[in-house]
Image (cartoon, rainbow, N blue to C red; front, top):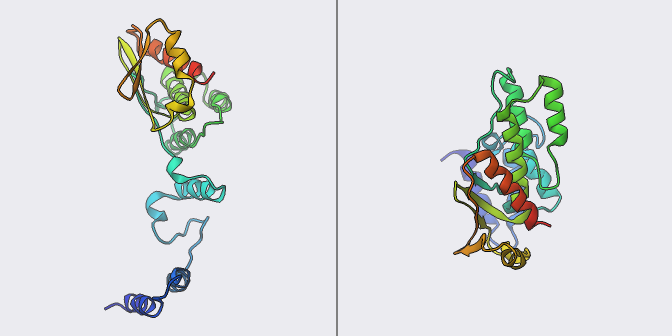
Length: 213
């Protein structure tokens, strides 16, 4: 048996009383070392999730924000966004831009980042504009508690997280929508005919704005 394993077993055997968890953690810390919490040299699973994500999770924990609230809406609306290599040549810079967009919270806007990108790389191509608009849609979904949006030529379907729809004034919207809005199970259906994916994206933005008005 490895010596480190034997030490841990002895610790568990010696500290079997109620409330011994802190003492066990302290001994385990002595045996393994703490690592550099905010540095590049890490111990434990931080190497698997990366320093950026670890620092993001640590920041949320220090501010008392629940980590299970860190969710991402699923958008299936026929529009995709990306940063083309022909627009941003350096892979590291592209990854950094993707990471910055992924870290946007509900209160931030993409305006400053959009201005920075155009200042650094020139006029923005459509795929990048789509990426920024999708980021804004995800922020709006998080504010409204919408877990998923499905959009096609005939309708837009919003799937809410449990309990989220109860906090919105949906009934008045449904009553004044001339039948365009209705419930189908746990999804709110917006019956609108729109063939172009980009126009559907615009319709979704307008609908989300109405939900949060």
